Length: 82
Length: 153
Image 1 (cartoon, each protein chain N blue to C red):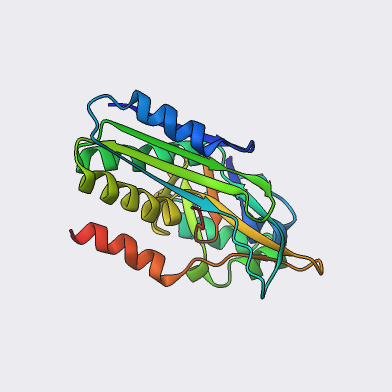
Image 2 (image 1 turned 90 degrees about the horizontal axis):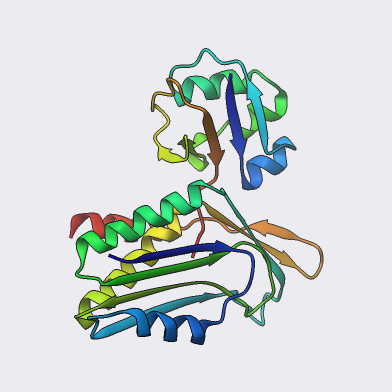
C-alpha cells in the first residue's frame, strides 16, 4: 500500500488531499498510469504531465524515478514559493 | 554553522527578526535580508492570498537549500521564515537573511536562496479576488531559468 498525496489544483480537482492505494508500480510514471484508471477525474488530472511535479518520500523526483519501498508519493503543480 | 528555518502561519516582526539575526551573527561584516510581500496592484485588487504547503517536505527542502548556500558562500548564519495560510494584501509572506564576513557573499547567497526556494520549496499561492474568483499562481519559465543560471556558475 502506498499513500498518495495531492496539493493545490490537483487536490481541488480530485476532491481529496490523499488516498491509500494498492500499487504494483515500480516507478512514478507507472503509478500515474494506475491512478489514471481510478476515475475519470484522475484520468483528466494526469492527462498533461508537463504541469505536474512528483515527490517520493518528500524528495522532488523525475517521473521515471523508482518508488520501491516508498511510503508517500505526492503530486503537485510547479511550486510558487517566495 | 547556524541555520534557522521557520514555517509558520503567524505573522513575523521583520525589524525584530533582522535585529536579532544581526546581533547573533558573530564574525559577520555584512547582513542582507529580503522580504516577500503580498502584492496589491491597483489594476487587479486582491481580496487575499492563500498559501498551501507540503508540511514535512517544506522544512526539508528549505534546510537543503540553506545548507547548499552555506556550502557555496562563506556564511556564518542563514534565516528563512515562510508563512502559509490566508494572508491579506501587503502582509509579509516570507523573509531570508544571510550573514557573511563579505558583502558580496551575503547579497549573492540571499539571491540564490530566493531563486531556489521559489521553484524548489513546496509552496503554492492562490490569489482570491473581490468578485469571488480565485486562481492558482502559475510558475514562470524565468524562475526555472534563474535556477539553471546558478547551476552553471
